[in-house]
Amino acid sequence: MGPMKLVISGPVGAGKTTFVQTLSETEVVATEAEASEDIGKKYTTVAFDFGTINLDGQELLLYGTPGQDRFDFMWDVLCEGALGLTLLVAGDKPEDFPHARNILEFITSRNPVPFVVGVTRQDLPKVWTPEDVASYFDLPSEQVCGLNATDNDSSRKVLIRLLELQLSEQPAAAAGA
Amino acid sequence: MTSKQEQLERTLRDLRSTVPDVRGAMIASVDGLPIAQTFADNTDAGRMAAMAATALGLGKRINATLDTGDLSEMSVSGSAGQVYIYATGRKGVLAVVAPGGMNLGLLHMEARDTAGRVANIL
Image (cartoon, rainbow over all chains, first blue to last red; front, side, top):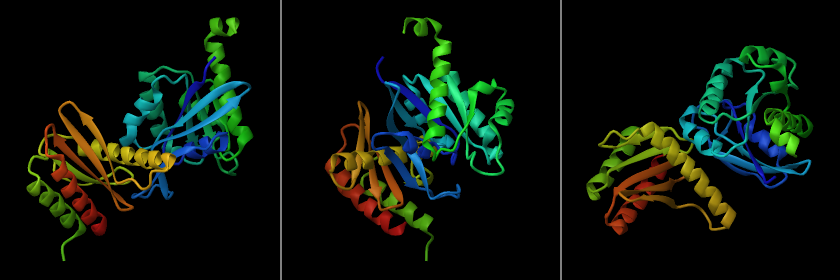
C-alpha cells in the first residue's frame, strides 16, 4: 500500500501544529503567521502543516489544517484524497466543542472518511476525559482518545486507533491484506 | 493626523486611479483578516483576505524550501484575469485583481510601490 493521506483538523489552539510537529519524522512544512486577533497564542496556521511518519511500515502523510472558519476552503483542499481524519479538541476548552463539531460535520459531510477525535492537554489537572467528550459528541468510546500533543507515544496511539478503525470499516481490504 | 484605516484606503484609491483597469484591490493581515478593500463588484472580501494570507504563507514556505530569498509577490492567473499577492512588510498582504490583457509592467511598478507604502503604514 502506498502512502496514506491523513488530515488533522480542529479549532484554534487544539494542538494541530504541535501534533504534526511531535509525530513527523521529516522536517515539518509549517505556514504560521502572526495572529492579529486575541486567540491565546502568537502565531496561527494559514495554509497547512505537513509532516510524514512511518508507522509499522505504513507511510503516513499528515496534513494539519488551519482552525479558523475563514480558512474553510483549505479544509476542502486538504481533505481531497484523504483516507482518514483526526479531529483534535482541547480538553480544557469545552467552549470550543460546538465549533469542533461544526468542523467535523463540514468535513465528513463532503468527504465521508473514518475519523477519531483526540482530546488534547490530558496532562492538565482539570480537563475533559475522552469518555466525557465521547458522550458530548455522541460517539462510541473507541472513536475518542485522550492525548498530550507534545508527547510522541500518546500522539502515535491516536493514529494507531485511526488505522484500526479504517481496517475494521474495510473488512474486505483487511482480509486481503 | 488621519487614522491608519484612512491612510490605507487612500493608498488603495491612489493605486486604482493610477491603474484604472484594476478590478479591485485589498489589504489583509497576514492571518487573513480584511483591513481595507476597493472591490467594485461583489467579491467576498473576507474570503479573499483569508485566501491571500494562505497564498502568502505558502509562497513564503516555497521560497524557504527552494532557498530563493524573501517573497515579494505571487500570482494566480486565469483565462479572464490575474491576481497578484504582494508581501507588505511583516504584518500585511496586498492583493490586486487585474483583468486579462492588462499592462502588467505598469501594474507591478505601481502595486510594488503601494505595497511599500502599506508596509510603512502598518
